[in-house]
Length: 323
View 1 (cartoon, helix red, strand yellow):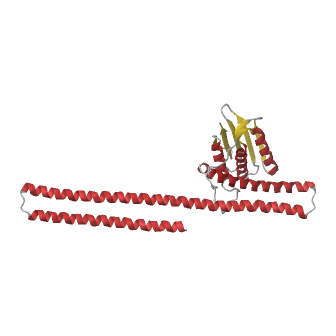
View 2 (cartoon, helix red, strand yellow):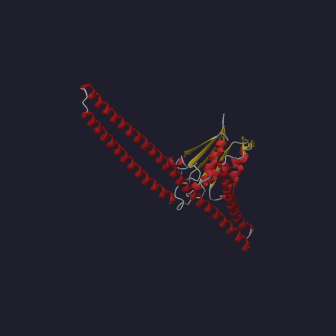
View 3 (cartoon, one colour):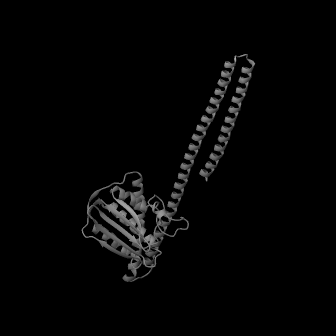
């Protein structure tokens, strides 16, 4: 609200300055014309030879034209600089308003993301404490509580990663790892968390070696899987496919879902910090707006590339190429 009021005040000031500038130009032009008329009267009162008379009139007219050009030129430059400064200020103010809105949405999202798993885990634990259950009955409750804790851990990790990335201080510790084993382990964890809810399938080359930061790769895969789960929630038979393949010059990781998909306009924005599709107050999907931002930057830190493509009949595939 304060920023909007500041913009209104700037509009008023700009209008006032423009009007004053126009009045200044009009007043000086009128004064120059009066000086020109007086100069002509003086010339007419003098008894000058014809040649000198016309030379004096031409000189007076030339001076008038120079003053007019000077007034118009300086006034136009001043007005142009004023307008450029105003529109620059307006752009910066709009950018600040956009950042404030994104941060507000982020706080709303994080609040929801923290409260939901905490409440869910507490419910599971209360049920285990207050009821006598068989091992078969305890297993799904423990799995759900573990999934909630994993969700909380991922959120905290994302906040820490985003802070490190913003400060250009993310610690990279690259080494050769078995990417096939790592990704298989992560997918198995998600299969356990979303058992009987989402179908997972894989086509992963065995013993694929990748020179990378293992924790960064864990964050990349986890966030992409979370994103796939999130956008597949409303599908009747959600399915997520994870592929890891080796090519001559690169290793490709592709994560495909059959969810609602991402529009072309949003494809350009989903990697922005805090960006989330839709309105925060009415949004049903989970997330903090940090996941894909972190993915993009961690991919770039590996000198890799990431692309978003559509799948048929619906869904999205994220493709990462490690050089």
